[in-house]
Image 1 (cartoon, rainbow, N blue to C red):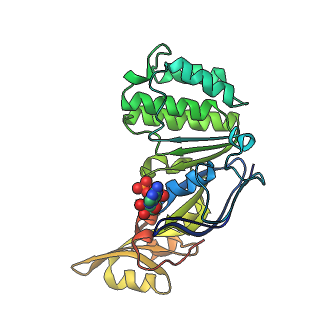
Image 2 (cartoon, rainbow, N blue to C red):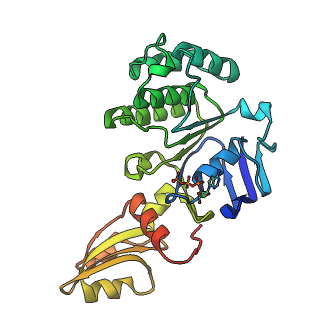
Length: 291
Ligand SMILES: Nc1ncnc2c1ncn2[C@@H]1O[C@H](COP(=O)(O)OP(=O)(O)OP(=O)(O)O)[C@@H](O)[C@H]1O
């Protein structure tokens, strides 16, 4: 199911959380939805999950609006950091309800992940630690096999090893049973190798939408004598630079930039990370779009 946002604006009182967003999520792709605090990521996901209505514009999933639309919502699973599970229920009851709701539910995946995350099905959800609650959310998200599965910072309280288990299982599950996965995260370095496509929001607008690989290929971090760095940077977009005692480090972003060309001038050169590019682009003044 394709997801289509056409000129979507969402206002909360005087705050414009999303401002004329037009974006598409294709079937069977893993997306990273990135941006600084308050950029509009959660609002976009809430609109997608039919929890709220846009102030103007159109949100469509497989051609239909998700708002109050049970048929669409059975193919869509949003897991967020505060997926407050009904406090009186046991883990097994929460899973039973989810299994009834999602037509593609995989009992096998749920059982396997219960073991992976050491969750007991007889445990009351009231007694779950933050990490265990996140684990339960992740189990539901992956076992739902919903055609559109969205994780909004789903790992609060999970330690590093549990988070890496989540990333591994997510990839395994995705390979076995492809679906559209949207991951919103601030732990970009940890997760970025999962992304096929990256969407960066800034001040409620789409600043950039690109295949993850392109984003890396279009960026370069160079260091060396200031005059050489400046010469190399001519005509390219400098998104960050630091100088000290005649030396300079700069991050450049634009059309494909060759590492070899920089090295042949005697500069140290490497690709910068998606996290670096995201941080510096969103810190720059103005709202230029790089899509
Ligand atoms: N229910 C609401 N009522 C009022 N303002 C809201 C509401 N939800 C979001 N906003 C505002 O809309 C803007 C976008 O918020 P949103 O939560 O979508 O950002 P975000 O990118 O998810 O941020 P974070 O990374 O901090 O979770 C912010 O200015 C926020 O204060």
